[in-house]
Structures are given as C-alpha cells and as structure tokens.
Image 1 (cartoon, rainbow, N blue to C red):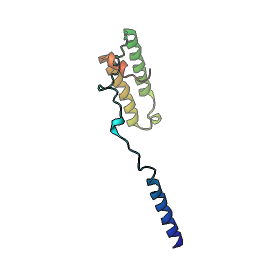
Image 2 (tube, helix red, strand yellow; image 1 turned 90 degrees about the horizontal axis):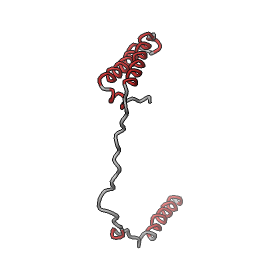
Image 3 (cartoon, rainbow, N blue to C red; image 1 turned 30 degrees about the vertical axis):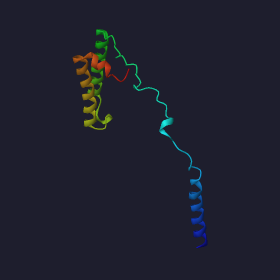
Image 4 (tube, rainbow, N blue to C red; image 1 turned 135 degrees about the horizontal axis):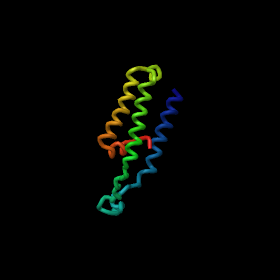
Length: 113
C-alpha cells in the first residue's frame, strides 16, 4: 500500500508539475507571416521525346522474337509450371504486338533500358 501511495503521488507531481511550464505560452495566429497568396508554380516537365528509328524497331523486334523462341524451346521444368511459362511467353508476345502497333508506346514503357 505504501508503494501504491508513493507511485500515485509521484504521478500527480509529474503531471501537475508540468502544467506550470506551459501556462503563459500562447501560439497566436497573428504571428504568422503570409508569404504569398498564390500556390508555388512548378516548372512543367517536358515530355521526353525520343527519336525512334526503324533500326531500333527492327533490333527490338529481333530481340523479342528471340526471347519467345528461347521460351518455347526451354523445358517447362525450368519455369516451375506450364502456367508460369505461358505467362512469360504472353508477356513477350504482348510486348512484340505493342512494338508493331505503336513503337512510341513500346519505348515509353520499356523498363530494361
């Protein structure tokens, strides 16, 4: 019982003792200095344009076709399952179709630069 009373009195002393440090402090809104009324203007990002040549397109097409051939020739066991093999093959097939339909979109979304 003696320890409980001591603990409660210490808690009250700590909680009550901190009040005197914050009594006369005020955070007035009038002290805030307004710097500007307009939001900051950011420099607009210019879209990155890339000169896509036919040579680049042909090179990518050959690379994708080679990847698809390698996947077809690789045994299923190396992929873990037939589903995984089909997913990887369909990814490269989709990229090849995108290259043929819209080379600009293909090179914008290319991740292995």
